[in-house]
Length: 160
Length: 160
DNA sequence: GTATTTGACGAAATAATATTCTGTATACTA
DNA sequence: TAGTATACAGAATATTATTTCGTCAAATAC
Image 1 (tube, each protein chain N blue to C red):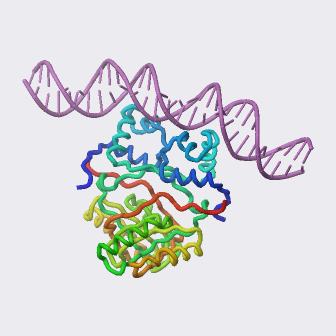
Image 2 (tube, each protein chain N blue to C red):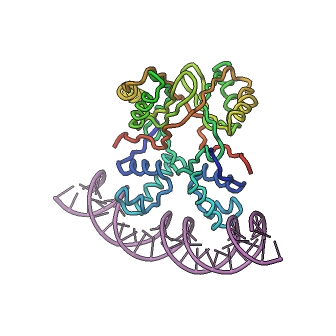
């Protein structure tokens, strides 16, 4: 289960291009995939409507907007039961600085990605908002020193 | 260092909107921020040229394109020296399935985000490509069971 | 094997949008 | 106070998206 829509080589090329550059004009895109503008647009629309393309986003330079600290945080809850998880997720969703939250296998229950202006702001955030969530048992932070790869292009290979 | 460009309230609003919806028309954007189209476009261009806006990307539904497995991987190297790190990064950059690579504090040296079609493909990838990198000492994988938050909108607050 | 339907395509016309241009007001500087 | 730079709105222009239409090819039915 999961996908059911069949993508041909051209569709995958479109997806690859739009992942790396969403602002390309339809005319340019059509050239790169070797079709005329009309069917190109039709394909893109189909990909959007089907939900394969979920959305489009601008990527910012965190340093330049004054967000100098990014971290990964492992959060363990006081119990893995449904109730605690729901409470945790609800609280996490309120915190804008937590930009990712994944439920994972392994010792920790959740992996968060957190962004703050600086270490002071980060500490404040963690103490006052995250640690404060009642169901949180343990938190372990890893500060990102530098990011060497942050590709927005996923590897597309699957079924012709 | 870091940022130097001053952003006013309108700029931050623009950034917020473009992060969550990069495909908005300039006319619509100008309405939402309360300016006419011309200066709105001027501001956006300025944000692009200054590098505050780095790029625009389409976000795909991983399930629908047949990428069912996402993981975080902690990688420790056989030594933290510059040479080993360079070797590691060079190899990692060749692997499309590794979409993120962060240098972090803590026990592990690097955190990777890896995407594959299924567990079998993931295992193959890790065994044949990642583990195979000579300078890699230890790898620890955490499979993402589900993602509850994956916001592309960073919290903008800083200096008026 | 032939007719028919369906889907995808290209070319051209149209509509919407981005982009440029010009003049004005406002804030900053000398 | 005069001068200058900056940001803005409104209108004209250029680009681009979008729609329309006719054609072709593959699949299906007869």
